[in-house]
Image 1 (tube, rainbow, N blue to C red):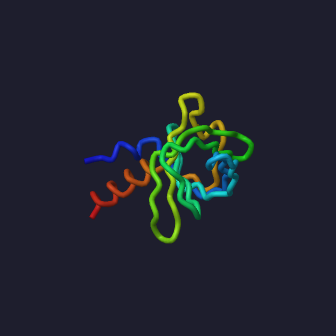
Image 2: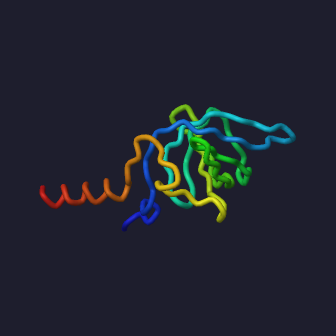
Length: 117
């Protein structure tokens, strides 16, 4: 069964800035952007962030607003999933992270190689 989440999802490696409220304190941290799609992204942080926390992810000077939909600890870091608001949809034409790789193209290439074996 094909993973539909891979459609439009891109692996990347780029430093971004995250801003959010923690209680009454405005937090601002650098994070590593792991993947991105028009609807959201995953960042790697050194701390846990509660579900539904409203965040602003800034790539270059372009802000994307959303909320935390998951926060998972693995490999010594927290992987935080953001679901972007309907008003801030990402596209490579808007801002392009470094090392952008399409998961869909990787999956197609892997299946083509599997057929050759």
